[in-house]
Length: 76
Image (cartoon, rainbow, N blue to C red; front, side, top):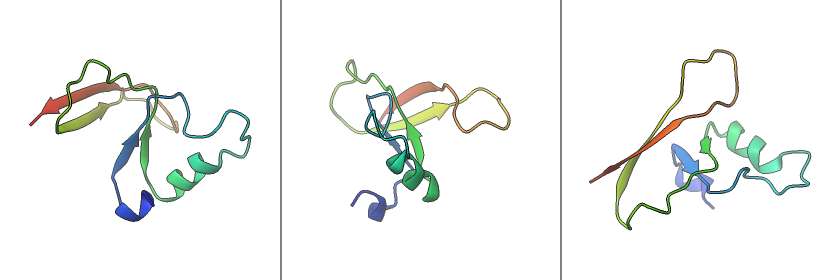
């Protein structure tokens, strides 16, 4: 399972980690319980295959559980 590998974050190209009609937000809550940062709606279509370091730079917004980020890939 992904969580067993202990990633610091995970990214998706979809708008949610949960299926559309999951009102309980099962996957979202599981990732949050593990302290896993989740980045959604990523468009990596222009990134060539390879190894990168990812930076998700959020604006300074206090007391929120979600925020837009400036997504940056650094090619190794």
